[in-house]
Image 1 (spheres, rainbow over the protein chains, first blue to last red):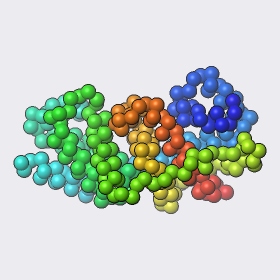
Image 2: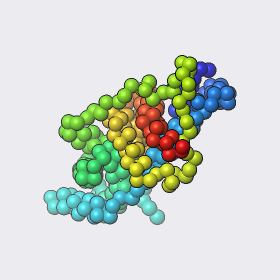
Image 3: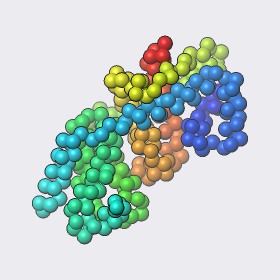
Image 4: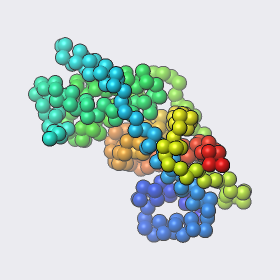
Length: 77
Length: 196
């Protein structure tokens, strides 16, 4: 497997959707190809960081305004 | 015990406004986060949040239950955000060609890839890095951004994301892959520096 082919398959690999045989090929390749290994690791980190950075709560005042708005719009008809 | 979405939907249809408020409470945080990521502006995100739930209330009569309530809700929310983006007239941001973000170690060039710092997320995610990440996300064309948000941030399956956006599973996977590569590429020089 060449580096370019690896790159095309990385999302399937990360999501656990890659055919087992291809998965083994890919892992064998990464044992010898440090840049590909780093690429996978940093790609995984990208996803983890976005997930982690996106967990902020809804501001209380936005919640209150939403409920006021809906009460007005949905009940005063 | 919490009622299921479907049970709440039935109550709302029977005129129970409290059931609607319960359903809003259940999903308002997720819808707001989606809108913030899509629109990157708190006022627009709040508008989108209000508009989405108003559409939910008005549309519940025609909700046929062919998809789950949450898929239907996120489809409405995503469409509200897409409409707002189109009205702004500033999109699409141009995605640099994917090749810009791929390593070149196969072409005889010296590998340029460095690892990112091996620190916990809370250390990596200072104010500046969060800002960089948001800017990178905003640079993705909206159809890629929407897929990345639904799949990788909100945790939808490819099928659910496809249903929400009205595209095939194959298109979801292809856009997701490109979005991930592009985001990694845009952030790599910043995080590599953090590690050095």
